[in-house]
Length: 231
Image 1 (tube, helix red, strand yellow):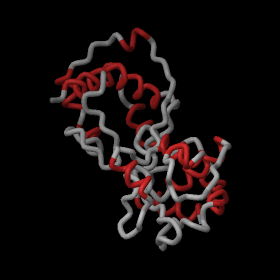
Image 2 (tube, helix red, strand yellow; image 1 turned 120 degrees about the vertical axis):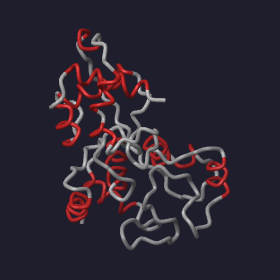
Image 3 (cartoon, helix red, strand yellow; image 1 turned 90 degrees about the horizontal axis):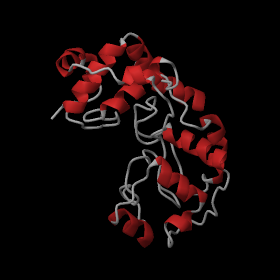
Image 4 (cartoon, helix red, strand yellow; image 1 turned 180 degrees about the vertical axis):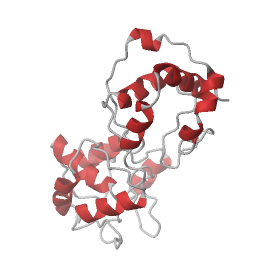
């Protein structure tokens, strides 16, 4: 099932590959059997004892239309709780530690790798494009250092604007998301570090690796200067 779904994602998003978000979705599909007595996920998913889990990432608790949620989850949503990788990880580990009076009777999944695998599986049914590591819902941090002489390059924002057409075909200058991370007003050092991480393969994303790989250090600096300065 996972293999067929991944093939569909690849076709739908013009060949983009699904990134490793820290878990194994095929193993996660097996682990989901612990949840399937109450929850469904996938094209034909519906609410049963619990709500369906399609598009669970990046939505507020208690927001699936037509399902009656516990008062605890409703209050949590009103208080600003959102289902991110971190909050879902905490909820799956110990539901009542995050939402004290949730109706979910699950005792929790204590092993971190099990939770990573389960969430990687659920992400297959959530927001796209799923192949961008730093995009919600996973926001995978990458520890990568760049040589000081590269960080010291002062980019020309006007040249960066000239180069930015390929970037803005996906990343909106307005900073709006829609599943694609905003790069508007990023600090230049963060932008340069991220692009060089793609360039050397520390960040794994075929499209971004291709884009970064054909940019010079000066061009990356120019793009960083432009996106940092966008009003």
